[in-house]
Image (tube, rainbow, N blue to C red; front, side, top):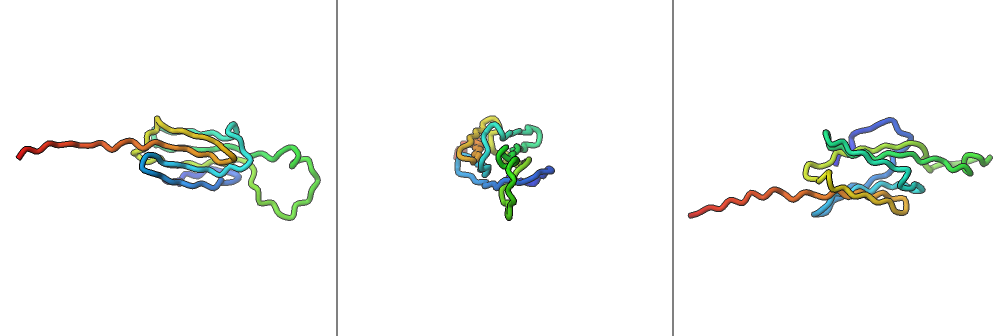
Length: 120
């Protein structure tokens, strides 16, 4: 995976990239967000998967008159893009959002086996 494509964003969620023998995985840390606030787009031409969305402040947070001494929570728009490996099946992508963590699984394609029979 390469995450070298950047756009103008308000914040950048933390990402973990991993793989096992069958899949590639992208885990995006999106606390407080629901799946309808997150969008995934795949560009078939250049094999780039983009995860984007917007985390908005709640009405309660916007309307209170509190004076904050520190704000570490990020709000606003985000976008993260990833180059998908050549052996990932872009027609077999699964995603789930649970407890503010988006997990994307990309199935690896089986390697082409060239079996040659040699007679001696």
